[in-house]
Amino acid sequence: MPAAGAGRVRGVSGLCAAGLRADACRFTKAVLRYTARRFTQETCQCAQAGVTYAFDSRTKPAVNPFLVVLPHEATDLPEMLQRALASPEASAIELATSRTMVMRTEMLEPREILICVPEPTQDLLDALKAWSGAPPCALCLVCAPVTRDAHENLVALGVHAWESIEALDAQSLDAVRGRARARWQREAALRTELESLRTRMDERKWIDRAKGLLMSARGIGEDEAFGLLRGAAMHANLRLGEVSRSVVEASRWAEAINRAGQLRMLSQRLVRVAAQSLLGIDARRARVLRTQSSERVQDNLDHLVALGLQDAGAQALADARQAWHALETALAVRLGPRTLADIDARADALLSAAEALTDALEASGARRALRMVNICGRQRMRAQRLAKDALLATTFPADAPLKQLAPTMDEFESALLELERAPLSSPDIRAALAVARDEWLQLVHGVREVDSASGRAALVRSSDALVDTFDHLTASYEHSLQVIMS
Image (cartoon, rainbow, N blue to C red; front, side, top):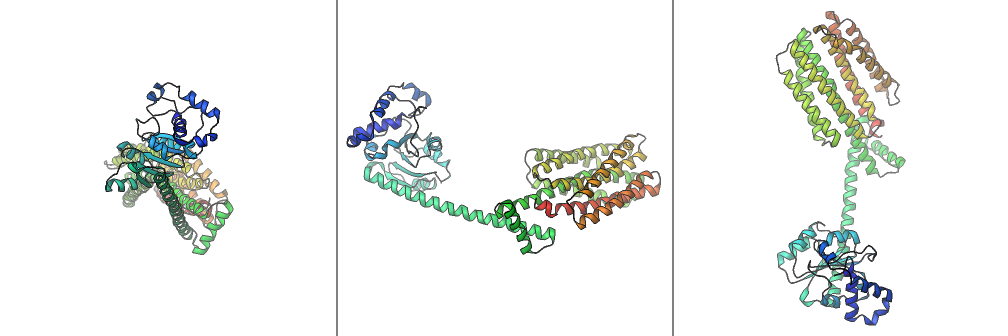
């Protein structure tokens, strides 16, 4: 038995013997000598490969050959098929089996596939399923008569034409191949048209969503929003649908970063509220804030879960959910100095997990402007952390909370300066930053006077005011034109 690719040249030899002597001038003496050498190769090579042929690396297949699929045990074109294919194109024949049909099709990219089997086997049906009813070229079947249900199944699998093996001759085979080619071309044109329609509908969906985001975020009309999208598409040399999808995704990532950043702040607020309750500082409001903060943590986690994050983002989210479950459990225990220390430790674990989640989301967004959303959101956490550590310093004899005050204050001041100097700004943002600066000074004053009742009250008030201010600022950055259109 010949090695790889011999099926093609053996088919050539058979065809010549069957009636192509008049066209023998098409084959040079070199081809015939090469054919003779190929017939002398060891039969065991084919048996070891488990196919009816093997492919010699020295031989290049014809460009877009005609692929013939035979039963697994076949070693050459059947005689009746050789007679039916007695035409000059026979020199471009390649062979395959049901098990190798898909692989050979991917490798050779044939212009047609002819399946010639006694009856459709399960191996053949399983192979056809790989194309999901849309084979890459015209596909015709020659076999024994099949039932009506089998016909419907074959059509669903992508077979374009069928001919009875009993009546096969050159004329009938040429007719069935013509039908297969015509149907495949028509189906290919319909699929192309359908894909084009789907693309346009998908683009329209993204355009409408992007316009809605711009109209809501910027307070502009539909025409102005569309003009922004069209101008960005022309500037970036991209399709309008691509730019619109980018706008929607930028908004999605900005909101995700905002929500993940809220987890950082809420982890510290819950400890601060617990310390506030223990010290008897506006205990009624502390209970309300604890309930609201817990609900807000769960709502943000549920929103982030619905995004279907992948890889690093999914792992970071899982860590944050686990940390929240531990903190939630600690918050349910009767409050005291010892349990407050446990709550603080578990809140720091949630803070670390939320920080990793926010960083992962910022990296996934791949937009530099999203960093401003992250920095602004982190300020909420620092305000709460500073108030928490100041209150804990008056509760515990240990000086660990005191040591954390100075670094947190330095980080807050540095980030506030960066936000004030950033080019990503607007009148609304600048006004909010001025309010944040005033509240920050009040918070620092409260930290310095934390030993007094008035100082602790100012500390709590200013920390909550800063959270509200930076919530507003984070939303402003999130909806800024630079972030959305970046």
